[in-house]
Amino acid sequence: MSQMLINWILVAVILLGFIAWATWRYFRIRRAAKFINNSEFQELMHQGQIIDLRGSKAFQDQHILGARNFQIQQFKESLSSLRKDKPVLLYDNMRGQAIQRAVPILKKAGYTQVYVLESGFENWNGKTK
Image (cartoon, rainbow, N blue to C red; front, side, top):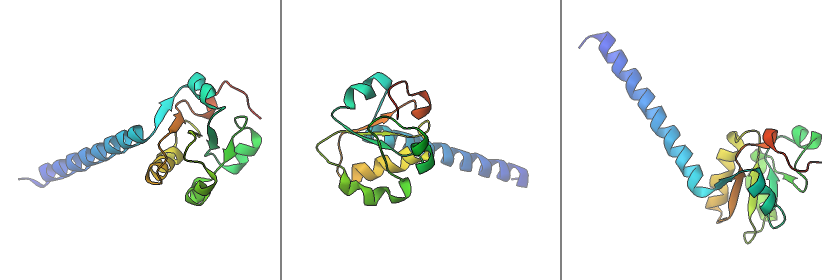
């Protein structure tokens, strides 16, 4: 086999590996949390715990009314302030990396009612502070 063919095969294997990893991660998050739209999020707000995973500056500038700001870097330490018997409603900027990190932590800690605002804060049409 020529070196060029070996290089192409190697690139294809790496690309397929990345696609498989990304697909596995996507479905792992989807099994652990339910992604909901703005109106479903608003319906659950009164009975749930709203967690803003954005940075503190973004949270101070504007956030969903009733939300608490949990920095993803200290997320595990913040879990003790959440109740397992109430829904946990998460949002960030368009389902970024914070959601992908927070959802597995919640699942591992035994939280079963985890909801994610599917469109992120940028498309939120409800009350803010």
